Image (cartoon, rainbow, N blue to C red; front, top):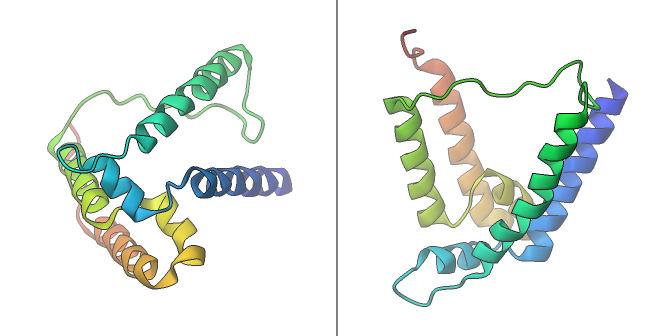
Length: 141
């Protein structure tokens, strides 16, 4: 259990440091990336492209492992269907990302950098999570 917590803390700190160093915790940079027909900022495209290399390596390493470092087995998604809830959630995420310039990871990091605007976003995000838990689940197919 302690090893899992330490690994999660390390991964979170590494992710947060990556957000800070890359400037992706800055909502203006994200909005600049999404402004395709204005003053477009390609920085986020380079960050995403740069993430492909370590992710490709991670998948190759995972294929050689019998179990993960902090769990008994790998928990990989098996669902491949696109349903209205998934598409609606993705659309809502995209609109929120475009309007606020934040998504969950950078919003948490921004609580330390710009707590006022980030706190509003984080509170709305938490309200959405609570609302999701309260709504009835989609019927099984």
